[in-house]
Each structure stands twice: as C-alpha cells, then as structure tokens.
Image (cartoon, rainbow, N blue to C red; front, side, top):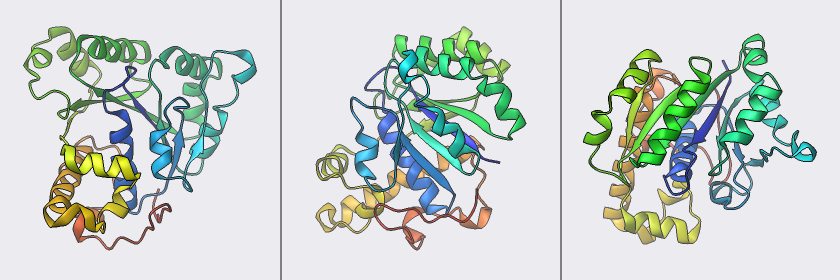
Length: 256
C-alpha cells in the first residue's frame, strides 16, 4: 500500500532534514519505491542532495497557493512519498489535509498517512508533537523520533505522564535516531554528498566510512522498529553489505 511520509518536527533545527535523507537512503538500500518531495522552500537542503531526484511542493494558507501541494497525493497513488516539511508549517499542512478531506479520500484510495515527528527533547518540540497527536488521533499514524544527536538524556520525556498516556492510547512507535558524527556530517553537508555517494567518497577515510556505516545501520534498525515500511526480510542487511545499485541522484526500486 502506498503512503505519504511526512517528516515533521514543526520547529527548526530538530533534525528533520537529516532524518529525511536517511529515510531516502533506507528506501534506496532496500529497493523500495519512493518519491521525494522537498516542501521546505526557505532551506531546501534535502532536495539539494538529490537535485535530479526530487519534486517540490508548497504548503500555504494563501488561497492562490492552496493547490500547490496537491501533487503529493497524486504521487502517493503510485508510490510512497517522503515529504520533507519546513518548520512552522503545522497550520498550513492541517488546512490542506482538512480542506481537501485527505483523511477521507486516503482510505478510499488505499493511501496511508504517516507523520515521523522528529523531536529534539525541548519543551516546545514535545508540546507540538502532543498537539498534532491529539488533533489527528488515530487518523494519522505518528512515529515519535527521539533525536539523540541533539539530546542524549530523555529522562524528562520518559517521565512525562501526559506523553506516556498519549503514546499508549494511540499506540505510537518510539524510535531513537542515532547521533551522526560531526566530522562526517560536515563533509557531506559542505560538498552536498548524499549517502550513496559517501560510501565511496575517499576523503572520508576508512574510519570515516566505518562511522558512516555504523550510523546508517543503527538508523535503519530504528526505522525497522516502527514497522511502517515493511521491506522484504531478505533485503534488510547492513548498508555496506548491499550492492549499491542506485546512482548518486537516482533511485532503483522494485517494491512499494
């Protein structure tokens, strides 16, 4: 079944873009059909890593631009769509969903909607997650992504009774996004090198490539815990053990 995967977090700087890039690589390595949509117009950094393999969309409450995100649903009729959302877009996305009755027509067209909510551990980030969860209840599957690259102590989150109740009520998967070493991340960001290219990028060095491999392996294992993508078991192998059949900007996929 095709799906829309919103990479959300509402606030800026919580790690949405890096998580979106990892999810794209997850699809490439597992040969899963996908479309990438860059919806962050002010800082389209995910699209910059895949210049020949992404589409753009705009979520806006302006009546003149109200239809510019419609292609996302059209794409989802054929493939799973990964949407990198900008910060502070909750009102516009919610308006698009409710105005177009997306939740109603998604069921009729067998399109699932998922929201991967990347959290930095901050109070505002947590409140925005709970707001989204209560607004859409069980109509949109939320996945709570704890970004260990920005926060390594989640005790204050684990002890939040309101959050625990909501996660239990709505059966929200909780996954831990691992920290990506600063050196490798800075090199990839500066050169706009995606993860497919990075596997053979000599300037990373042997240990740098090993750290990259470890990061992707851990991140993929966490994505698997959410039980959302469901790739065939035979395809789930560590990133460096796969034959990288996708080129740096393209996608090779054989399964929805």
